[in-house]
Image (tube, rainbow, N blue to C red; front, side, top):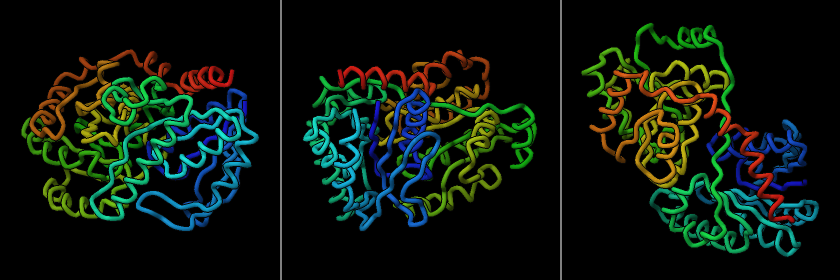
Length: 382
């Protein structure tokens, strides 16, 4: 089967959406499908066309930017050209270009599958307001034209104003999750490299330094945790400098983080093998997301496959990894005291949060998820 996948950003861009799409594209290619990714050349030095891990990647020049979106004049031509050759067109929302691509696909008689990753909630401001409005219109046009809409969980679909309008088209397929295996020696080398001391309680956080990730609530919870575990330290992995649109948020947190001194550490963006070692080194992973831009939280499952329990906010979708595996705690949104209590509870009883890791790994493996997509594609092309 020839699958045309379209999205705004693809690797090496680093986000949950791009990681999801890359894992799925590679798994489908490994199963014998021809996968073509149509995306943006968001940095000039990126090649216009390359073959990555069995996937053809075509990047189009960006002529303008609107908030986090991009304007690519070449989209109609390339979408028409590539959709003609495809058996199915797979779109990833949110994406400004999804509406014209879905229209082109339907004009050509090609079925359209949409994966709706999350709501787009941009900061306040005129430009962001226009971008949000444009994205919402594009999303509804795309959903109307789509044959099927995939979401991570039924929980998220049931609580989404957008998805509830298209309930008859919605199917829940969880995201693909895989972490490289690392040895005990590699984990120890990671601990030594970043100065993690023996007996130190490591509270991990993985993601951009962004408001919707709820970083401030872990920052505010740390003093309460330190009262019980004075050797604890929060370690943040992911981009924390020059995060687009989050400059004021970073400035707001800077003095609070400085007050924590050695009990807070930024590691920045790590390679996948180092991320796996980091998650093995953590005693607990915290994911205190605040809104519907977080529809699942793959980092929770990544931690769980490494044997590390997670704490998630009680919001649709994001609470599901913990509820499905029982490897962690769910806490109210923006509740500092409850977050601190959950961290202390897990640190006090780590053996009480050990799940069936092989079963979790298999359920969320890219191969399993690719097979579910494969069945869906076959169903709508039959």
